[in-house]
Image (tube, rainbow, N blue to C red):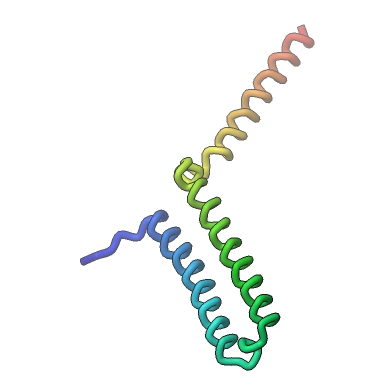
Length: 105
């Protein structure tokens, strides 16, 4: 079976690796914390939970933003803004040439 490498596949793999690496890091840090003496102290545990939930909400926020952009089609044609600007530049140059011709007459 031959896997066809497409931009969508590469993006999906990189995005998944990014999320998994951060998730595994958080799991590792959680295990380290629970095996330490700080886990028995209530105030340190509250601080740990604050940091943990802040990181979780940050990850969920980034996933939501990227998913919303993906489903709205922002990644379908990434070259379109460049071509739009080039077309606009050509229109502006054409209008300027016409104005110069009218002023020269």
